[in-house]
Structure formats: C-alpha cells, structure tokens
Image (cartoon, rainbow, N blue to C red; front, side):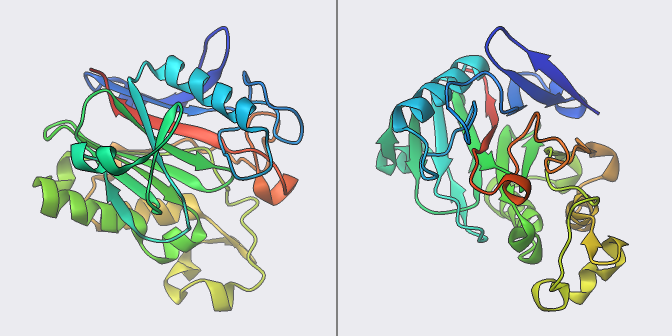
Length: 261
C-alpha cells in the first residue's frame, strides 16, 4: 500500500513497491502545503484553471524542492494517447515556464535521464508510474477514462519494449489516488466505454478503473505482483486531493517520478 510522507511544507504518497528501487524518487502530492487560495487551495500545480500564476509557480517550486530534482518536465495534457520522450533534444525544444519545462501536448512522459522529474497533473484521473530498474527507464502516464479506452498504459509498455529494449516482466507499476469504483459513474457508458470494460462494473453504471488499468498492464506483460494501487478515491477524499468530479473548478495534484542525479 502507499504510505504518506510529510515534510514541514507538503505531504505526498509513495509506493512500497517503488520505494526500494535504488536512485528512484517519486511521490503523489496531496492538495496541502501550497499557497493557492480557494477553490485551488492549496498546492495546485495547473496554470490553466484560473489560479494566480505566481501561486502556481510557488507551488511547483515547493514540489521541485521536495523531490530534489534539478528539473521538472511536464506536458500539455489532452486526454489522448500521445507519448512524449523526454531526452536532451526534447528538453532543448521545451517551453520554459519556471520552474518547469513544458513539452508539446501529450499524456505520457518517458525518460532515462537523471535529475529530471516527470510531472503529471491530476484531479480524479490516474497518474500511472512505470519503472524498469534494469534499463533505467521511467514513465509517468496521465490516464483518465479516455486514456483507458485508448489502452494508453499498454501503449507505453510497448514503447518501452521497442525503444529501450525493456522486458515487461522487469517493470514495476503504481496507480495513484484517483477516481474509485465507488464514484466512477458513467450514465452513458454504452456510448463512452467499450464492451470489454463490462466485466469491470463494480455496480450498475459504475466501473473500476483501477482494475482496468491493472488488467491493461498485465495483458501487456507486467507481472501482477509488480503492480501497486493506492486504492484511494479522490472524489471521496477531497480533504486530501483535488477532485474535478466533486468540486468542478479546482486545482490539480502533482505526481512526480524521476532518477536522482
């Protein structure tokens, strides 16, 4: 299970299956410890939701300081299936918005660079961490229901195999606090979701996207024993996490993973 780590400023959740990997830094941050005012209180890391830019900048600075990364890299998330490779060339082309570098639109970041934290922003969507300790490769995936429909987690595993020579059996995965089966209601699921998701109904009109992601990862070759789920519903726990479904206009949680320098 994920454990909560707290510093004097901010707190985050870390996963036991990732915590023992040498040199790996990761965390899914709660909404506390920032400077944003309601409805973004307080550790909002999204620039485009109406929060004050200077507040977002300070929040990101605190996240960066907490993970100890020399650089944070994010992307313009679009609920698609585009995967962005974060290498030296891509970093040189990225937009600088201190204290982060922003890649082109995409919903997954992959890198083998050290000292670079991959940042995904969530408010009910999953952040899915993938790590190959053998090849020194990491991925951070923004996976909402559209990403699940697109089978994005499996597509990232495929890219890791093709681009870096990763063996899926060597991968470790972690699924962040996110929309739980208790609250994942889809009244138009016949139009929005594929029939293959029907076995993952938790009750009428409700779906278990934690299990869906686990299934997609295991079908891609990741051992089930290597996958850890936080099993915390962001809709139920708005005292700790931002939730778009419950709150509407609100902030975004930070999920970061990277190799220490």
